[in-house]
Structure formats: C-alpha cells, structure tokens
Image (cartoon, rainbow, N blue to C red; front, top):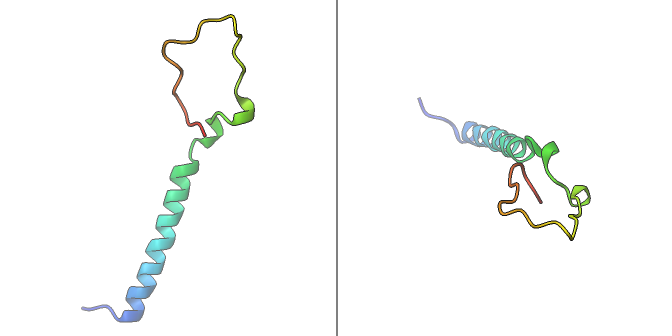
Amino acid sequence: MSLTPDEIVTMTEILVILMGIGITWAVYYGSENAELPGDATVPDPHEVDDARPDTRGRTL
C-alpha cells in the first residue's frame, strides 16, 4: 500500500496543524501563574536581597 501525493499532503497538513496546537498549548499551559511586569513587587530598599531568588513559574 502506498500513499498518493494528495494523501501525503493532506496527512502533512493535519500533522502540522496538530503540532501547532501542541506547541501553543505547551507555551500557554500554566501561564496564568507567570509574573508579569506590572505584577512584580518593588522590594524595600532597606531589606537585604535574597541569596536565592524565587525562580518558580515563568517570567517574561
């Protein structure tokens, strides 16, 4: 059994669309927990900086 050129093109189109959906989901999954520029708090200048900053989640 061999595929016709039209079937190969159709299968490629479907796979590319599914990959695009998968990549989009991977990028945006959990992004509601990201620290956005307007959400960052301004630290008190009299406090000592953290030795280990919190790197959990995604940042821009």
